[in-house]
Length: 388
Ligand code: SF4
Ligand code: SF4
Image 1 (cartoon, rainbow, N blue to C red):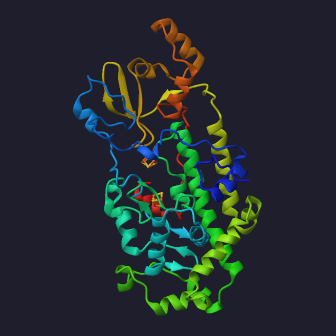
Image 2: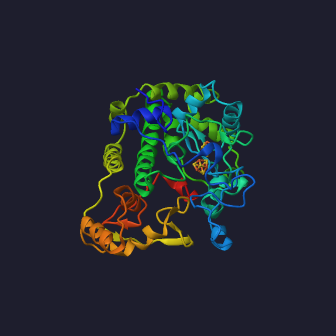
């Protein structure tokens, strides 16, 4: 069963839902319709997490990171596995731009193979070297982005990277760790399921041999973003000229897989990564406060008499807390947390409520010695170099 309220696209929601066995909440602070990373219209004050305070110096406010409204976080191009291409082709509810943008990629033929629709070499190079322009450069903007609407044209069928990206997480680093693990899992899933689809549909032996030896060429056609007809024929074998039909079949095959099927048709890495997702979900579902805490390194990006804004686990998700709470951080010196809270209540006349302490842990202002460590990225996650 697919959970219609899941923040994930339906197929991924069904698969990941079977791992966590619960409803996955959306990220309420990643307000895409009125992008949380863009400067509010008519305002000089950024709204990226900081509270405007008249006593804040303008220079501190200006140090915040903004995205351009006509780019947002869509300065990325997805590597679409064959089954997602098929599902996009079959989805009449998408905005016209979604389907025409995919048609343009298919017609250009660059890295259009039975595995799926890959990213053209020049674009991949730009994305890899343009990390600092993430969220700002329209040159890097995804072809599936609908500028007039400010939305995704292939919504519901996005790849593992787009499906799991949120600029902000309600539970800070704990939410970020869950989505990062889910992205790493889905990258492997989409690779393995795409391979399963090719095996199920069938491809002539000579074409299969070419497909399995595909390399990242940097010859003239690859650099010019075009594909030679002879190479396309060689890669597609008996499916040459019927590529869309091939993708549609892949979409149907993948659409019938439940999570047990995915585990059966994928390599063992999927099961291992699913275990990591399960563990990250357990942490995300818990509000327990660790027994002992210490302050963690962070960057103060704005401060006033009443508030302090810090950057901790991710530049796009700063946290603003009261000056009083911030000044309590050194009190967490490794003694038991109840002991620290009792001592602060005695000495300062107030102790923060548990949910505030938990937020400090979630956003990595406080942590256990071992803490949450970032999940090593999958080798398939080459696109993460874009800054996503
Ligand atoms: S996820 Fe992207 S579109 Fe949504 S609020 Fe964040 S930056 Fe804006
Ligand atoms: S596929 Fe959609 S969500 Fe992903 S970058 Fe393109 S427009 Fe944005």
